[in-house]
Length: 404
Image 1 (cartoon, one colour):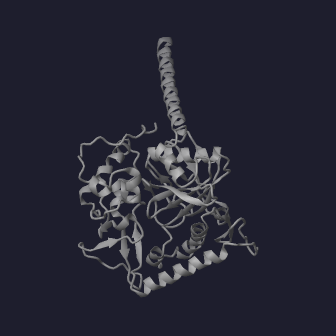
Image 2 (cartoon, rainbow, N blue to C red):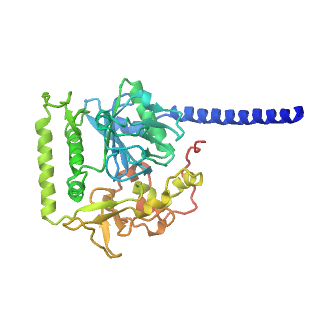
C-alpha cells in the first residue's frame, strides 16, 4: 500500500511540475509578446503623418468591412489615420450587443484604460473594449469581457492574428506610456457612408445607427477626439463636453458637423430616388476581412484551424447581401448575378450565393484589373490579385505559436 501511494504521489508531483512548466511558458510567451517593439515600418508611417510613438491614439472599428483603424494625434493637434488592420474574425450580425451570450460584437463608444490591457490573455494578447458602457448599463444590457484579441476566434469579440495584436498592443502601450489616460474605442456596424445608409435604410437598427453617425461625423469633420455622453437611448457628443439630458454646452464644431449631415442626407435621398436597392446582410455567424479569403493568405489561418482556434470557418460561406424590394422582401437572384459592395473592398465582388469558404478558395472572385494597389496591399506587400498566381507551396508567413 505504501509503495502504491508513493507511486501516486510521484505521479501527482510530475503532473504538477508539467502544469507549472506550461503555465510558466505561457507567461513567458505573453511577456515577450507584450513587450514587442513597434515595427520599423509603422514608426516610419508615424513620422510621415507628423507624429511619434508617444502621441495619443483613437481606435475605430467597422464590422461589415471587417477593419480596425488606429488614428494618431499629430504634433499639430489633429488626428490622422496611422494604419488599418483587416479583422480576422468577428461573430454575430450587424446590430448592437444587448445580452450575455448573443455573440454580438458591440456597437457604440467605449473607453479603454491601461488596466483593461491584458498581457497574459489566453487569446495571445488582448484589451477589453469597455462594454457595457454607461448608457448600456442604464438600459440593462448584459454581458462583458468583450475584447480585441489574437487567435482569430470570436465569441463576441474582434479577433485578430497574433502578429497584428503584437503591433496593436505595442502602439497602445507606447501611447499610454506617453501619458494618454484612456483610449476612445469607436465601434460601428459599417462605414457611415451615404451608400451604406441607403443600403440599410430598412433595417430596424437604422435609428440607432444614425445616432452613431453623429459621433462618426464629428470625428471625421474635426479630426479630434470628441466628448461622449448619453440621454436615454441616445449618445450625445461635444467638442470638450457632451450634453446630458436637457443640458446645454458650447459647441464650436456644431455647424460644420450639421453641414456634413445635411450633405450626406441629400446624397442618400438622391441614391434612393435613383433606384438604389435596399439590402440586408445574411450571416450565419459573423464575417472576416476579404484579405484573408485570398488563397495565398489562407495559410495564415491554417495553423489556427489545426489547433481548433479558428472559429466556425464554415459560417463564412453564407455571408452575402440580399437585395430587397419596396416591401422589404428578398429579391430572388439568378446564380449569374453578382452583388457589388459599394462601400468597401475597392470593387471586389462576390457571387450572389456568398463568398467562398476557406475550404473552397478557387471560387473566390477578385478584381484583377485594378491598377492602383489597395490600402491593405500597400501595407502587406503583395497585391491581392496577383497573389493568387503565387506558388501554393510557398512558405507561409510565420505566426507566433498558439496559446496553450
